[in-house]
Image (cartoon, rainbow, N blue to C red; front, top):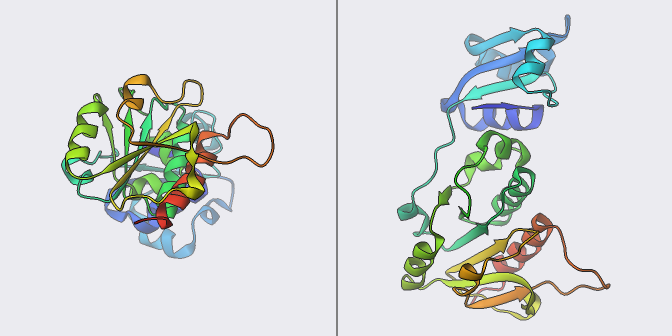
Length: 233
């Protein structure tokens, strides 16, 4: 996959050397080497290729590449057998917007979530999510599942408690969470699907200080994840 943009590319170059195939630097006169810090330029010297700006624009499909693109190995999903060994899992039920998913992944990684499961979709643009997560996806175990209900059944047998985000739920500030816990977030348009809602043990909500319908799913995710990281039995 090809990622672009300075922040995400530098993260990949600094922390995922074995996955890097080619580093593309968009030529901008004499300053083309300035796209990379000197130590990274020297480290990846044999893998660097210089591109004309028009080709960099083509590879990034018109995105803001900031003079740097990286071709790396395709994102490899984590198996459920590995994910279920963790304590704190986030499930995204029907989310498809890569910007929102990336923002959730970024917050989840920063705030201590162990793994993410995405349901209700067949595939995702992992390169776009890597960009929108500022590279956090490269360090976050993630899988796509065709049938989250089977996963919920197995997680329940393993002692996990499943919490769903809902405006009608209990105030998250008043809930103490199980040590083995799953947070389920629905899409902004439809919320949690009915079949998923039936598997939820406890619905939780964020108390609003002003009359307002809801928060963006990535903002709500950050608040709920932070609370669930500390208020544990």
